[in-house]
Length: 293
Image (cartoon, rainbow, N blue to C red; front, side):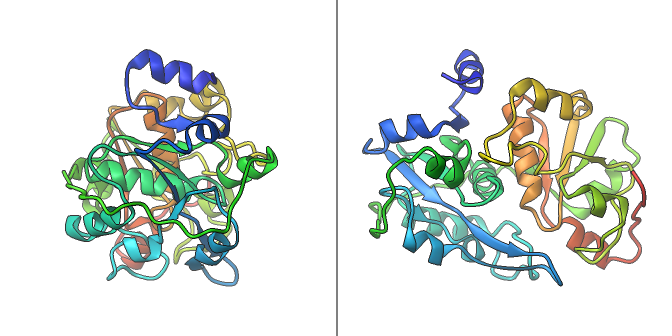
């Protein structure tokens, strides 16, 4: 049992993070839904995204279903953002994936866990708590030589009943107010060069004033894509763990969900994701951006 699992079992909460070994042992459990949430991203020369379905159809964890976040997110969203849809839209997609009352979910992706973390955050926002992220995702699964499949899979349709938690999503107004609020900590999950203003990836240079920078990449072991040990994560997020409320952001809601997931894993229970992210923020020329560290 990993350090994560020991800590979680001691708190009595739902299991938030599972290891590949655990998943392989439980993969045939009738109430378990394994879901691949991969989206492929290219940032240069401009940000663009495409569904990870093609890669999933070539090879995936046996029995897994595919969740296309490009369709599940708000269909009216701006390009490269993944803002929350209506509760009805989300419930319909989850039901078709077989996710509902009496089911457990393990989420993974073929990148840096952040797409899995995004769907985890969406499920939690709409009131579903019995979901976990696969530590290391597809990368760790393959490195360990675990079984793979190309067979299509469809779980039985379920009824997903949304119970919206609006406090888990921050809007532009709350972020603006948080700049001068000493009880709230803003966290930028994007890379350091973008944070300092050396790169312009999402329409603006720099970061929201006062934001701390914990990138969604430094929380990982880059070879296995597993999250770093708990004590290392605590050091990275120490200022945030001491704040009353934390708001994470990135370009369009994905990397910020990864930081938010880790903060929740570490025990913080008042975390929100700024869904519009830097794309929305930088589009409003009246809003400030800060250069440097």
